[in-house]
Length: 58
View 1 (cartoon, rainbow, N blue to C red):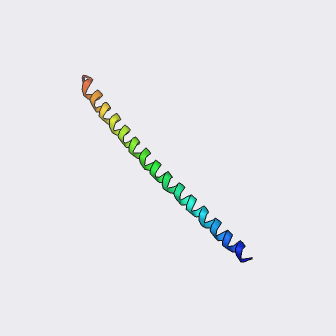
View 2 (cartoon, rainbow, N blue to C red):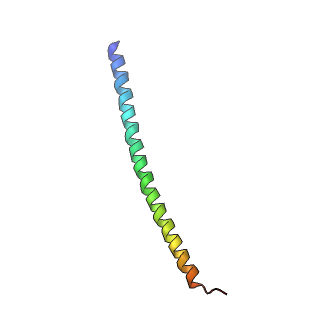
């Protein structure tokens, strides 16, 4: 009976470890995506500024 309890605790611990690793990988991917979105939005803002200065105002 006690070996079943030990097996259940080990299985639950392994499951939590797997979920922790997946959460860390997700966090790293989200952080990388946020950096990419930030770079793209800055590039778009710069291009819009250049476009705005290139268009003659009437």
